[in-house]
Picture 1 (tube, rainbow, N blue to C red):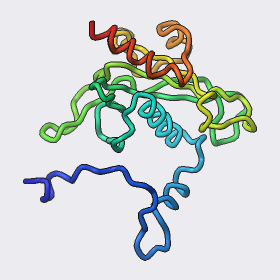
Picture 2: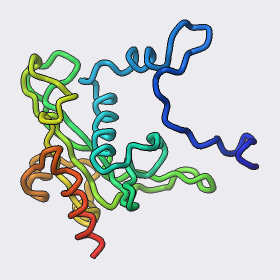
Picture 3: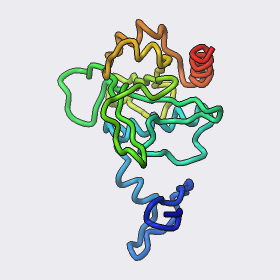
Length: 196
């Protein structure tokens, strides 16, 4: 089938949020505000983290692709897996959350084969992000100063054979965290080192 049939959908473009939801008296921005305003939820925080990484490396000019085997594709072709955690959540807590990153290896999907039988490490580099706020009244996911990042090459992550990893292990493997302003350079260093 061609791209106009039922086999392949057209490639999405970036939307502005001003698009109307016909006969609902609302816009796409209204939907986004309704569905994504709680930046403490795991799902929304994860999407925000992917966006922040995409912006840092200049890859936010195309929409996120849900079924890609990685989260961000840099302009120079590096595949990035982005995983995040936070000490505070959207539910009542008796203590701060333990940071653990998941989804390090995952099954891939292809049009011809469907889902792969086994998980694999599919990115060139892995970006681990933590929203560091430890008090609810200071929590601001939109303040990049509250984020810390660690970056590891695929071979290091794959050598652990882990699907999930605690922050303490990431710190041992990656060394000190970098802030948002240094993230793109750190990603470039890790990818370049892994490709040499």
